[in-house]
Image (cartoon, rainbow, N blue to C red; front, top):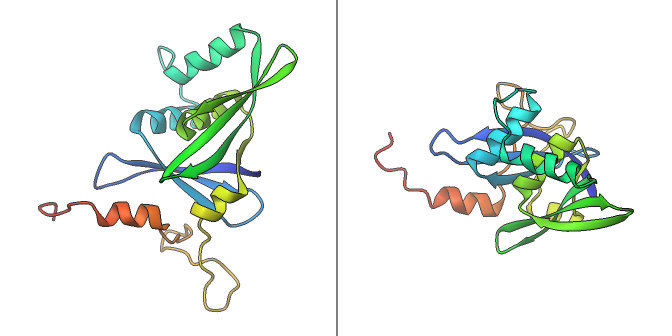
Length: 170
């Protein structure tokens, strides 16, 4: 398993789709995962330290885990099958570990609240991870004008983007 951090949560300007970008902590690999708007907001709100009037779903989940005497140890993106990512939340409950199946977006939203590590399996990174291309000299990653790394779109996302009907949006 490879430990990752949340690089960013991005919003498509053409639709309501969101992508969370995870970054390998020890190499320049990134893993983009499409997520829903509510999960994206839940992740972003917590990362920015914003307070909400009432608990969001992931706040409720974290509170219930704590009230039941358990604690979140880590979350992991474990598999990618048929363009669907799978995750596991590892809990420590009454002296033993317990894994719970989860969508990656929910696992990540819980991880930022519990302040626990996020991991991705090497196989998932091999399948869907992307590494910014090196420039001609090979010394640094290619960068866009705003200084962020330019990232090649993985096949699963390229197919999605090519399938969008953008007629009438010009």
